[in-house]
Length: 479
Image 1 (tube, helix red, strand yellow):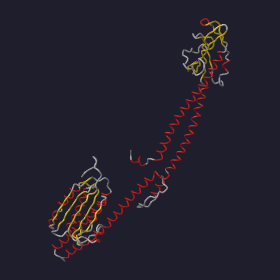
Image 2 (image 1 turned 45 degrees about the vertical axis):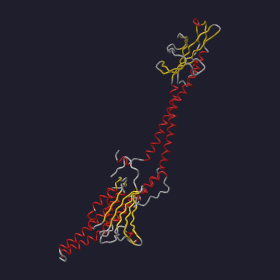
Image 3 (image 1 turned 90 degrees about the horizontal axis):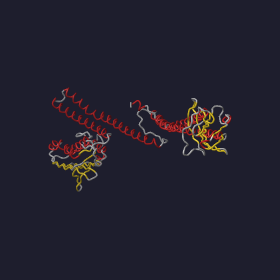
Image 4 (image 1 turned 90 degrees about the vertical axis):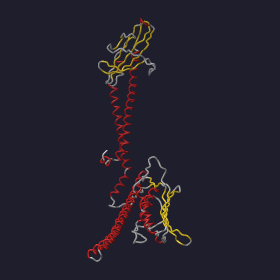
């Protein structure tokens, strides 16, 4: 199915077809059934007339002799049948014969009956009804086996009365036309009612569509639809949820652009000043190159961290991240920064337990790298630095402990905000902000806590707690 056909598919048309089509089919079947039931009743009524005609003829019979020697006599004027002919539209024919087929009276060319009397005839008489053709016309025939008895004899007469079908067909067509007219009127009433109901039922959808189309560009405020039907509330709630995510993404994008333009302006201005100073010969070329290199390094680090902060938000919007081994990633990152640890002559110790976290590998790697870099940078040279990763059955807990000076409470409250570095000369203030965003995306928690012995701060603990994933299934990816 093409996109155009899906886009222009009408809910009202589907509702109308879904309601009217079954109703029309049912009414059509009901019309057909009603017509045939009426036709059967009509045949029963006219068959009764045929039987009355046959009985009227039987009253005009006489017999002489008994059984095989019996001779039937019939005096049946045609006027006896005129009373049963309806409006001169149909004609009636009769034939009186013996059981052996010997004609007594009537139309000799009327075919002789060769059937049998039903086991349970519809009337209290030995009568049978059947359809036949006589003189190239369709006829309905009634056969009556009538015992004839008198003081002079006894015999069995076979009386056949045939009637053409003009009256029956005319009446049947009239009944069919009346039935179709009434059923068509019924369908029209039902269709009008359904259209009216569907039109009113879909009116909230059209109003909601008009409300959204009338909004200004960039308006992502929640939809206010207090009068919307109960069935539309899930759609309204889902739309508001999507708009809320879009507002969050737009705010994040605007903040990223604002911060990037603000933070990159300073190193670029410094870099321009250093280049101009080197061109004027104010500093030695070698010193100028070192200063330019340091500025480029800081700008590169700042750009990478800002891109990492944006990537966290991008990964946050993705669903169903894989299940990843946090302990393997933590040890790999510790191995990567081992030259920095050796440079500061730190007594480094690491203890990990197998730990699964539902997260993208990049997130856990970035979280580990930023926390370890921060701890190495602030740990005094030659001091102890320990990393501990363990699980308590509900959470995975990562603790990185150094023996630095710790932090004061005021600084701890804002260190997780972007560009809130404790020392602007050694960092951009994005490392811990990236860690905070990652932990929030993974529905965990992060805290910086001074480690105190007595009344003296002996170091700082960075504690991250992440929830364990749901029980693994065969379809759960593991990184």
